[in-house]
Each structure stands twice: as structure tokens, then as C-alpha cells.
Length: 115
Image 1 (cartoon, rainbow, N blue to C red):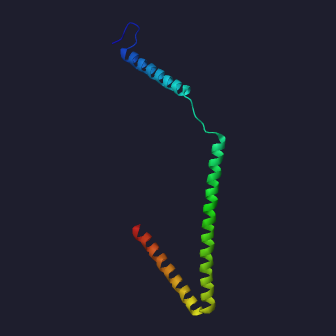
Image 2 (image 1 turned 90 degrees about the horizontal axis):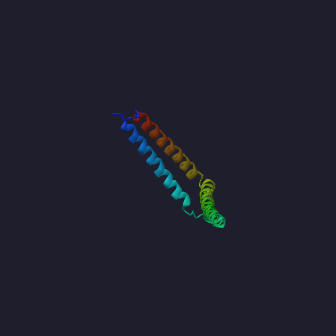
Image 3 (image 1 turned 180 degrees about the vertical axis):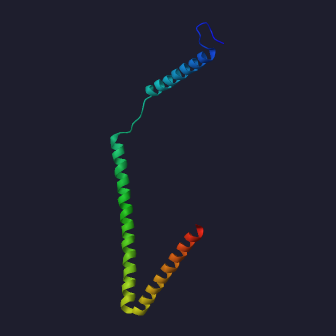
């Protein structure tokens, strides 16, 4: 079914829908361009960054303090055990090595079994 110009009515319908879609998109973009955009002041961003930096520094200091405290406790326990009770120190070292070897062997065995 062709009209007098030789263009099918189906093509005319697709062209009409295409141009309607294009005009709808352009109208939507024009509406977006006409809207007022609120951008916060630069000082607000700077304050937000400074507050986050302060919070992170505070958090890192607290974590560093806990790390140093726990490291000191562990090292003082090891040194005390090594100097005062050397047999207990060597037994704890042997137990640690044995547990590490056991769990490493179990982990490798699970990997081999799953493949």
C-alpha cells in the first residue's frame, strides 16, 4: 500500500513517531534547562571535608592507641614468660607451631578434596 509519492504508510507512521519522540525529548531537556539548580556554597563543602578529616584523625588515633596498648601487653607477656618461665615459653611456642601446622594441613586438605 503506497500513497501517491511512493512512500508506504508504515514508513510515514515510523517517521511521525520518531519526530514526536525527538520533540518530547527536546521539550524535556528544555524543562530541565529552565529549572533552577541549587549548588551549596564552597564553604559548606570545605566544612564538610574538614569535619570528616577530624573524625578520621580521631578514629585513627583511637585505633593506634588500642594497637599500641595491645602490642605492649602481648610483648610484656612474652618477655615476662621468656625471662621468668623459659620452659612455659618454649611449650607455648611449640603449641603455636603445632596448631599452625595442623590448621594449614587441614586447609590444604580441604582445597584438595574440593577439586
